[in-house]
Length: 300
Image (cartoon, rainbow, N blue to C red; front, side):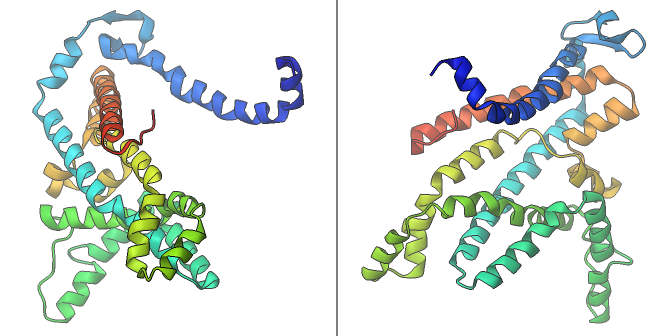
């Protein structure tokens, strides 16, 4: 079959494929033209082409800012803690859901677990302040009613970190189970039956059958998460953070917002964005190389 006839026969599939390709070209590759702002003294009225070329001067300015290193440290710290706490959560949830025998209970549980993913971080932030606020928070109200001292969930660094991580797990863990549950559906049930014949306990079946079966999925998602170690979402740290905990809550995305949008220094903001992209690429390639050497699995 010639290529032309093949395209004519399956044109619907290629039409569907064109939609994500158009999206990536417009919203991912198209904006790459603006990367040159990092090397220019960008003037909003002169545009990218008319702005003066300054080379790496903006990079030197950013790397001399103390606030940049504070934001970089916080980004690494929060992402690393998220990786420790949030990454295993969907794996554990997926295995628990997979082990549940009651179909109706499993469907209800999945629905309840998925719901937080669809809630805006603005709404989640309101819920967090209603629950954990120092003065009007419901949790501290209960503690005071019991004669206990209130806990500064949102105004001290340690409690704020716990609140930040707990909120992230609650919002993302349920949705993250989808990929692992999809991987678990491909596990051969005969392996479990053979393990039962051999007298394997449930925990041994999970350890020796379930986890090895989803190891490629775990490795792939772990590599992708490691690639995001230097980039972090804007919503959660900005909405849950405040001036009292800025030493921990100020990350690169909020730094870019303050420098780029509030101060109008678009060149410096672009420098930080380019820095995140390059370091993220290095992290992905490095973690993929190590993963291939240690486990034989990778994404490239």
